[in-house]
Length: 166
Image (cartoon, rainbow, N blue to C red; front, side, top):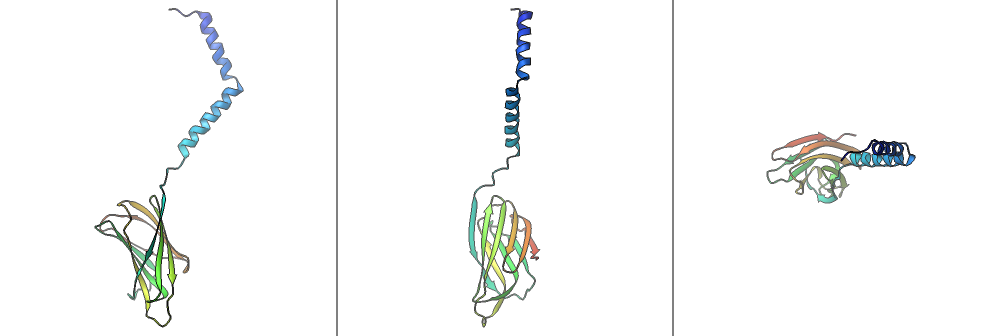
């Protein structure tokens, strides 16, 4: 079947007229904005989970404010907080651990205890809810004004220590 020159000319004129209308450009801009929005949309981080942990208190003689994270063979992580001041054996050190995807924010909570009891300087916590993945951990102690941030890979034997800075 042979297409006539008039039909081709008519199709060409229709296409040229479509590309010169305001409506075409409005639709083109909307489609482009939609594509850009899809491309730059952040990935889903997952649901937020919060865990409240109580620490085991002890006196180790370490007055340097720091945290140590150690990954165990069973997948759990031991977090040790050193250099705690003003807390006695009847006091408490607890953590509010917020996990969103691979980001972990840890908020420290301190309760002093009775002043005539033995002072402590170390608290140990067991985090048994982490997968064997790489995490970004931020540790905050609002009462002391100290914090630390570190990447952490939860694989057996991995250990990292960070100083708490003001």
